[in-house]
Every structure is written in C-alpha cells, then in structure tokens.
Image (cartoon, rainbow, N blue to C red; front, side):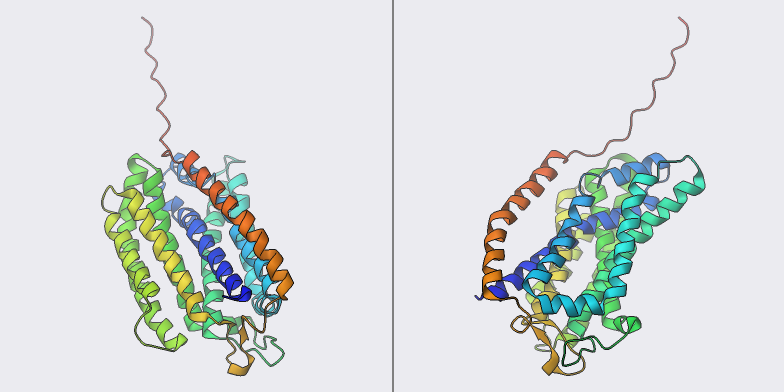
Length: 338
C-alpha cells in the first residue's frame, strides 16, 4: 500500500474518531434541556461529558491539519469551497465551548436560557454542517480544471449532503441518549432511556434512506456495502438495547453505527478525495493531491509513534472517569431541639 493511500485511511480514521467521540458530546448537548427538568439535572447531564468534550475536538483539528500536510491540494479546494460553512462550524464550536463556562455566571433565568440555547444549537449545527460537507465530497461539487470551486454557499446545500447531515444529527442524538443512560442514575437515566428508543428508530429510517441514496450517488453495485449494512444493524441494536439494562452494549452499538456511517463515505469516495460535478477529469484523487514522498514518510513516522499514545491516553481517561454521575444527596433535615 502506497503512503498516500495510508494517509487517506488515517484521515478517515480521524474523522470516524471525531464523530464517535464528539458524537455523544453533541447528543448530550442537544438533549440536556430535554432530559433535564431542573438546573441541577441539566448541570448533571452536561457533567457527563465534562472530562472529554474539549479534548474530543482535537480529532477535528488533527483531521484538518493532517489534510493540509498530506493532501495540500485537497485541503485548498475543500476549505475554500466550504469556507462559509466551516466558519459557521467554528462559531458553533465557540458558542458551545463558551456556554460551558458562562451558563453559571449569573442567576438570571434569561442569562441561563440564552446559554442553554447556545449549547443546544451549537451541538446541532456542528454535525449537521460537517455532515453536509462530507456528503458533498461524495456527491460532487462544481470544481474546474484548476481545482477551484466555482459555486456559491447555497450550492453546498445539495439534497444528498443535507440528508447526510440530518442522518448524522440523528445518530448523534441516539449516541448521546445511550451515553446519558450509561453515565447517569435515577430519573435522568430513565428519561434518557425513554428518548433512546424512538431516536433509534428515527436513526434507523434515516440510515436506511442514506444507504439507498449513497448507492445511487457512489455508483457501482446496487447492493449495500458490508459497512453500510453494519451501520443499519448497529443502529437497530442500539435502539433495542436502550430498553434494557445493557447500557454499555447500547452505547457501543450507537458508536459502531456512527463509525460505520462516516467510514462508508470514505470507502465509497476512494480513490477520489473530492468529486467534481463539472467533469470527472477534474476530480481530486489521492494521487493528484498528495504531498511529496519525503513529507509523507516523516508524517508516517510521527503518526506511528504518537497515535498509539493518544489512544492509550484516551482510553485511560475513560477508565478514570467511568463512574456514573450521581444525584447530589438531599440536605439533611434539621432534627430540631432535643
């Protein structure tokens, strides 16, 4: 396997890792005002992702930096085409991050409501917009012979791209519900359970539609690929297991559903990295957009050394913070004078 192919696989892993790890963050952020009926419950819901949400964002940063280093032409075309969309993603990431710090700075109901909405909308827009962008890579965008994007912002809103974005939002909601069920107790856990199953059926319907549409967009055999079938099966398992006490298996199933969905995009995309709807001759591929051999060798050595360390650290952090978030004990009642 050539180095540019290896780096295409590595970048696909970064994107899959981002959606699997940030997916439950986004889901919790979208659901925290629904499963939480009081400020204490909403705070407890967000506490489940407190140790990881900012670290999980690094996977997106590394995916972008890796694209810049390994496939500079792909980076130039993609980031210029998706410039306004990525700016909105950046604003959504900022709104979500700031809301963690600002929501408790005032007791004003309006202040808290504002930052709750910032959290919810930020967590909704990020997977939606990134899903649209990933869908557009496979669906195709108007790219000329110089690999310049010739469309406008609204040209990015392709029907297939929008369906991909909505599908990823639904999977993130399911992933967040299974994570809340895994990490909370009492009423909060029961509400997460109640939402997980209907979210699962919605996710299954969207994934099935997405798989059918993807077969049409990607060309090739009409039979779904094994990874696409896995996405449907995993979403079904997550929905079914959500009604049981197998919280870990339900969460793992929703993670597999997201991983298989995002991974399928890159599997169908290869050996292209970006499709031109203008002419197939203008497609960007792993061959015509890759960096030089020496740069890829250096990057590969760095990845071989540090990537396992990152995975070990990530796994250890999940082990350390594995305990459920308990409801605070009720204040002891005053026994009165004796």
